[in-house]
Length: 354
Image (cartoon, rainbow, N blue to C red):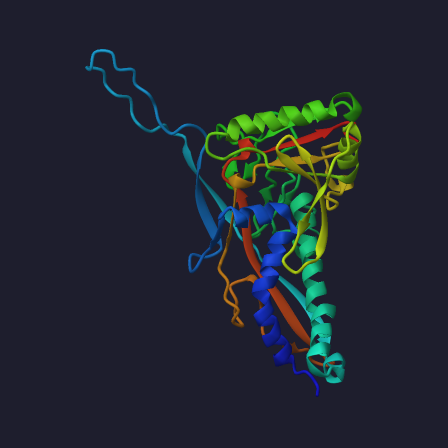
């Protein structure tokens, strides 16, 4: 008995909530954001989101000596409003009708799902992971946010700068709607090395503890790091004792290959999506992101597995392609990510980090 396009679509509808969970498991940062309760599923507000950023202590102290002192105002003018826009991304793939006609029973249906939708999802995941790490805008995901401050992304057609700038001091870049130069405390931590064997680990510690000092009041400390393969292996080689690596495990029992090792209290992950040839301005020798996951927030328009899904890995209705013996399926992602404390995050680069 052949499998109809609607049967495949309804089966995918049942599986999509689980697929959205595997998406967050695919990248440790997204997993931490969801686990920490920082994912907001919006309803009718639209794809644009405003959020409050407080770059320092919000109040003041008055020393009372006689009881006649005027108490200083209880609020500093340190609260500003940032904004982010969630891009709507649609991954479309085709399933030949011949494969559906030759399918028979649940086993063949499972094979179809593994061959097409699951591979499509994993391909989509990899595109998003590369965009987050490098921000080169390849494969049509240039609207998704990037950590690379030397790249731009355009969720609504207007270019925005990546979150972490690989430079010291301030600049005129606009990150999450706020100017780095015009907003006190809206700068990330940064250090550059002269060679990993010379001062690589020292510079990593320097940035780590800077981030810790900035985030310890309310946002915790750096809990995850991502480095290119050479930088990751150099750090492993610098350790003089046997170390144990960890890896991300998913709910479906698959190993997604995320290797990690401890650096102070942080998990340092190998991020093979970092293409050093695309990190312009960092001399293309190495890159390590240091992230405070509790300072990141994500939002989506919601989860509604109807045919006009709101976009957290929902799907559109299957469509017969004219003049082609195949049906087209769509995976829809309407998802935004931003930070509320840049100063609690950092980046390490160098002329010879590798």
